[in-house]
Length: 377
Image (tube, one colour):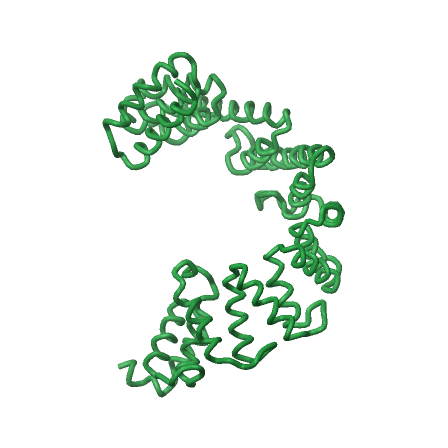
């Protein structure tokens, strides 16, 4: 059986475990991978363990042997299963017996991840950093866990530095991101990390100028806006935008609109908001509507503004976005005042009520208008 066929069987078992469907198909897959598991394929052993645990969880003799064989072959998923099973799930064994087993397999996770980290696998070092904070062995104190996590964060940085020294611009960006953004550092140790803004800034500068990298210019702009000046930040955002890095379009537009780091220019703000909208930025659509409504950088056009607000309010993919309520409120306001549409109190009330249900305070206040008394009865 080749690796592709094996993967197909694995996927069948995964799907069956997820939705308890296709019993005949999953049995066929189990029968197909069993010979591979018996020959020592750790992934097949793990999948059999998962299958038997899912459907025969009360009989540990059916799934534990497969999980243990996979774990002994350093299958990390199987080792984690055993660590969690003995610590949190197994209830047919006395605590004094099962807890040492859970601790044993947890230390085995640490052992396997340490080997990977020693080979330069950054994700292994990151996993260990988080493990010592969120899932440390029960024979360690909280302080010991935090100290170990901090040590693994330093190992992670060392691994990323080694890659950056020999690697590509992407490797340098990964290091810069880790130095500046923290690379998913648990908040419990975040305040204990050294300040490495200067090193991150140097790397972003090196990558952005040496490789004409828009994303790096954008990140450098974010750093400059916090650490240097709005003017330096705008220069970076503009370079990122000119290189076609689309997230920078909105920032450039907002800078022109508000005069932040550059002289206020409504025409250029409108131009860059339009580019951001064309690139798929939904929030820029809200700001472009505002430009049309105010006549900022364009002729005042309530019809165009209303069309954009309605696009936002009617886009189901944006329902969880925090700015949709603003569009709903603006639609209600335009119906109330007859801007771009005929005045319609019923529609105004409905949109204000919709926006208020999404937490918009201005809409809540608007509902108190005496004109809406008939709709509130």
